[in-house]
Image (cartoon, rainbow, N blue to C red; front, side, top):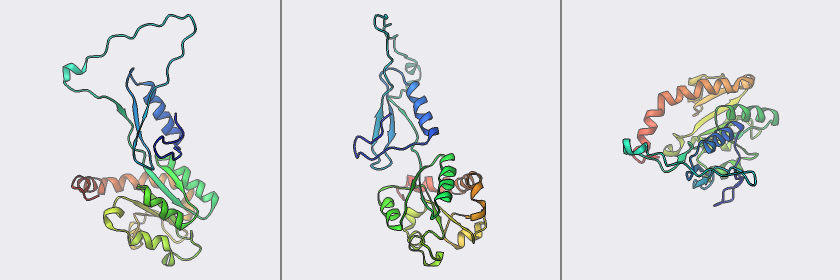
Length: 227
């Protein structure tokens, strides 16, 4: 498994679950086939090949069997196997312990998480990466949410980009899963500070509901080039 993208050299980091999925896909590859994953930074495809099987010196190596021609019957074939794009998530949280809880919860539902320490760094990351989810703690900048530079940046973001980001606000003033409160703060979800230990359960409830409500609409907009 490679550690850096061969094109842009960015470090590739995956969760244990994602690594297991990729490893299983590599082991299932037929001879001559390869696996393609997408670099989260440059969005280019990276080809991975199954590791060669080691043979004991002097051991007879059986020739490969005839190719599988099952595709002749259906008229369809695939020249490579692909793994679905891994969704990226950005986390802005002032407390190290809370930050790790948020990170673990988001990884448990399949996100590849990027943690930043400043608003400037967050906005810089967003210039190059299309994050599917952003979790922002209301006290990240040390003041109130109404004076937050990052929250204002999210509120003013062009809708053709904002509609594809699941924006989560976290803080002591919120009531978890309260849709009206989320709407009033231009967010997709609000989570109370006291519920951070159950953040994974909140995500498992909120994200499917969001996709059920807006998934078809976003897919249609994407097909018409609105993304």
